[in-house]
Amino acid sequence: MNSSLIGKIEKAKHYALEPERVTFSDFSLSFRGDHDSHNLTFKDNNWHCSCNYFASHGLCSHTMALEKILGEMLPKGVGALKES
Image 1 (cartoon, rainbow, N blue to C red):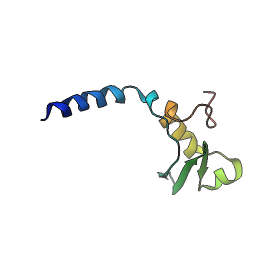
Image 2 (cartoon, one colour):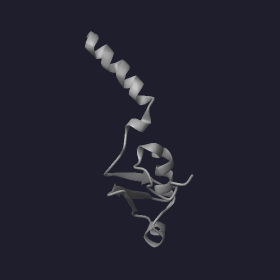
Image 3 (cartoon, one colour):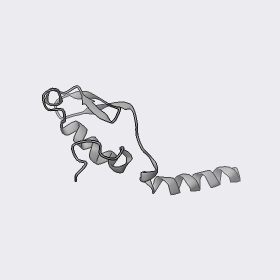
Image 4 (cartoon, rainbow, N blue to C red):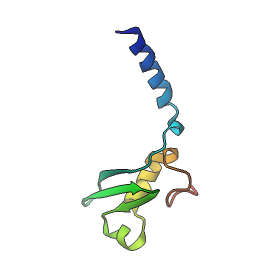
């Protein structure tokens, strides 16, 4: 293995231990819920989910789960769980 690649692998391991280095901005994904799959987007620091609950409440279990998963990788002050 190339010695420069070994150094990059070690650096990647170091970075992976510091998720605060990463901040997500805009992305989309599919979330497989218990009853259906839902399309979610995160754009301009706001969530959107295709589920019915999100349409009427502006948040849902899918967006809250992602906030828990992504944690500090989301911009500061984003989401329903920002206080927890």
